[in-house]
Image 1 (cartoon, one colour):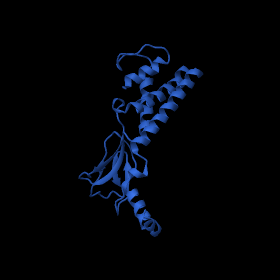
Image 2: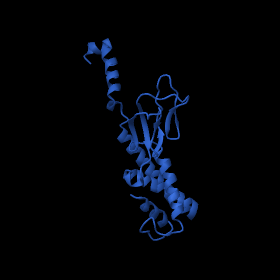
Image 3: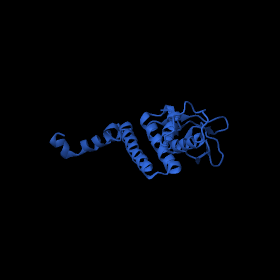
Image 4: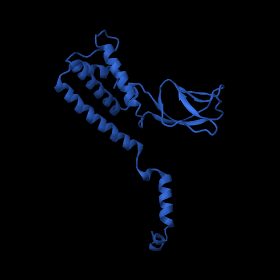
Length: 195
């Protein structure tokens, strides 16, 4: 799915014919693109399986780490003894302006272009854009209700896929399994029973 596909879905709510490109002159083009940008930022800032990455960054010569402009958020600010690290804009730096002298592991949430999103996420973004467009421009209660139902279904699908992709199951996390099996194996009753 592309940004043009989402714009055409929004315009189709009013019964308008699809556009051939984003460069076409249309009175609602800027409003549609603004909605898409806002919704995409909000949806992607959730930091799900498709746009959250564990990365190691090296500080620059001035002792700061400069993150790319596509950074939406950091899931956790790294702890370095003796420094108070904070994210200022897209710069990871010490609050007392002391230099960071070693590499830092971070979980970074990136903003991806619409065309690079998984189809299920792009569909959810399109559904929310259609809902906002229906609420702000069409204002027909039946259109709004249909758009709300589509968004609800798309959100459930994205959340379900996130659970599948992230594998929120203790059996997939080897450290937890090791701890449980170690604790279970140390119990004398379980050893006598042969467990």
